[in-house]
Image (cartoon, rainbow, N blue to C red):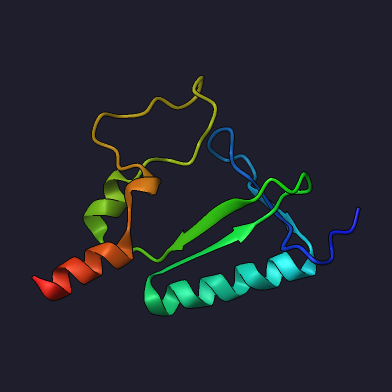
Amino acid sequence: MNFKNYKICSIYGQQMWHDQAIIIGNKKGLEQLRDMIDVALTENQSEDVFYPTDFEGYELKIICLEDEKTLEHLALPYHDENYYTKSDNEIAPESINIKKALKSAFFN
C-alpha cells in the first residue's frame, strides 16, 4: 500500500473516563491536523477530509468553543455505555456549527 499521497489520521477515542485517547497518522496527516488546529484557533472552526488505513475517508471537524453554557452541556466523549449514560440535556458535538452561528449573529 502507498500511504504517502494520503492524509492518514486515525483517532481512537476513550472508552471511559481516564482512558487514553490516541491519534496516529503519517506526517502529511499530522501536519494537516496541526494546520487545522491553527485555523480553528483563528476562525473558530476547521474541517477537512482524512483517511484511516482502509482509505475510507471521513470528515474531521475541529471547533474552538469558548461558550461556557455550551461547554457545560457538551456530550462527554466516552464510548462505553456501561460506564457512561447520556443525559437528556447534553449537546451533541455534531450539532455545533460555529461558522453558521457566527454568521447568524452577524447578520441579525
